[in-house]
Image: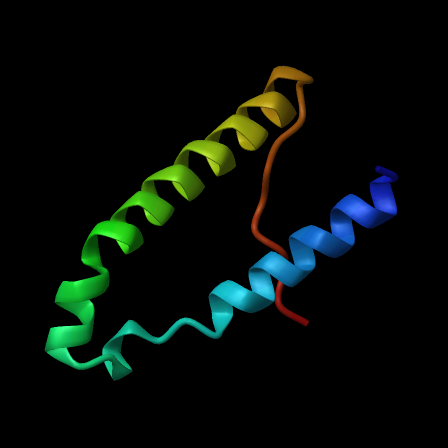
Length: 68
């Protein structure tokens, strides 16, 4: 997969996560989905940490973008 394809997929993932609004879910829905949601969040955390660690291992910093 090319770098451009990877970045496009990351952008799509960010967009998908931006659409998640757990506050709009009913209490019952949240309770029903909590196991899957927890699994997804823990997996995302591990994957994001791995990517960030790989960037840092190359001597680079991850910085928040400066607002325009």
